[in-house]
Length: 255
Image (cartoon, rainbow, N blue to C red; front, side, top):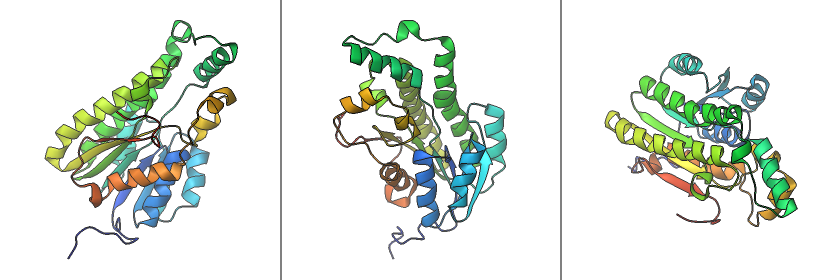
């Protein structure tokens, strides 16, 4: 008998945590995992948003969690129990830096962001994107006796957009962190992989100035399209993938 499930119950009996589940890719992942039989725990820093998502997801419960708060992450993840799958989709961007880039584009000059970047903006992006990923990975490997962790990274780690150094650096760090943890955690039966989306129609995209969107010639992915890849990485079909970074940008560039 084929041990790989392909029916709608292939996550039946699994407990899955999705961070950043209040919107975008996290919400799409939550819907897909629940439809495939998982008992889904949704976490987000925005209480109203995660409650709205949970209201439309079967077998779901909502929790408030700020991934930048190490103690809170430890408490929430440590209290779930029987955790089989973690999809870490929480992250932030920097709308101010995006606007500076757009203004420079409209003025026909190169962006000047790094010299203007305040330490508070740097730390905010790093605290959520990179520190938050460490907090979630650490708590997850403490709590799990086996299973799968999927981290949402970004294609910005590869194409490093001019004027967006803090975001690119945070996501490059996320990829390296996840790959290093993957090599360690597989010895204990926990697989870790990364999906690295390109431009996707999320709340971050909604905050992207029109000039930047118009300059991008490719189609934006939908959250559901990226969620399909995350769910693939979370399932038995990807059992031989460990420490992989799957670039999901519709062919915008390859590495």
